[in-house]
Length: 182
Image 1 (tube, helix red, strand yellow):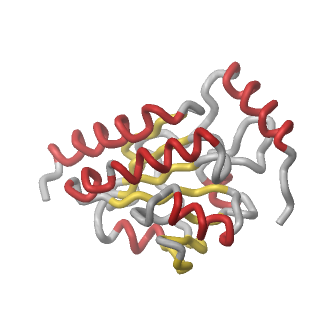
Image 2 (spheres, one colour):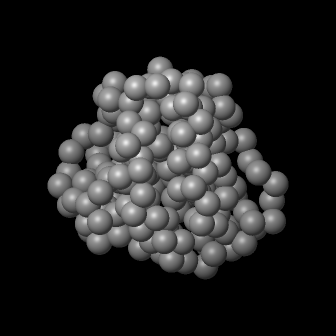
Image 3 (cartoon, helix red, strand yellow):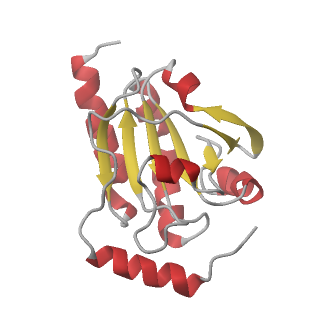
């Protein structure tokens, strides 16, 4: 796997923090369907967004790199809130450019075997969701989407800081669920 120098990632993060929000897909847009190798609890399988949407809403979040400080915080936050997502009928999937061997470990240690993380080593999913980091297009920006079962994006949140992704996506799901009782 090709490694991206940490200095390049750090420079992109600093630059991205000073740029205005970029062109992430907007609410109302159709969520691009995808399949990818994913890991849940260290077990590898093929994740399908289409199949997941048949079960209910999906929170799809992109993150720059496994085992970095912000991405670890975010994974812990999502893992801690997974029961709240399930109570709303939703599932969570994280996506990064990391290879599946790295994600097998990350899914156990940082995601605490609570939700899957998918490998997007070629950046295909990032590009489809306009979720690539400005300047360093091979790394994902920190973007969270809430996708309704019909495949419509109902919410997006873009911030390199991991602190509000869980709270904001839960709030969006609660608002959607109030209009779409189970």
